[in-house]
Structure formats: C-alpha cells, structure tokens
Image (cartoon, rainbow, N blue to C red; front, side, top):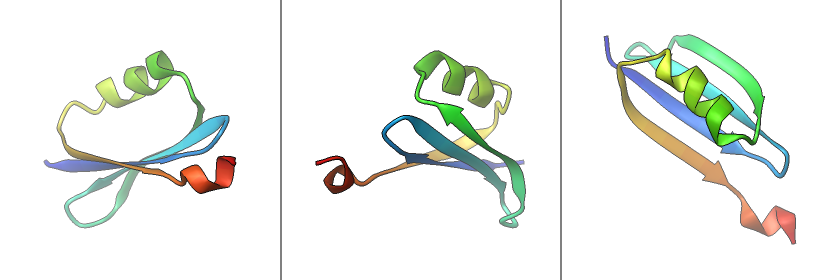
Length: 61
C-alpha cells in the first residue's frame, strides 16, 4: 500500500496527515514542531511515497 503525507507547518505546531491511494485518511494529528516527534510518528508509517510541506512564511512576518 502506498501512502502519502502532507504537513501543514505553523509557527508552533504542524498538522500531519497521511492518506492512502484512495485518498482515505490513515493518520491525522496536530503535533509540536519537533523533528524527533514528527519523525517518530512518520516512521511508524513505513510505506510513505511522498511527503509534501505547506509553510506560508508570509503569515509569520
């Protein structure tokens, strides 16, 4: 099974979503902006094909 991950980066947290090939949500959670935490959660999902980030830098100015 191929899975796809999207990460919406905010100033103090990230929303992580993992979808399958039929666009069904496999995992969705708001996590602290901590690389170890996010990596730990995504490592459990071993078959990721693509990870996409969304960070709107204009909102932090």
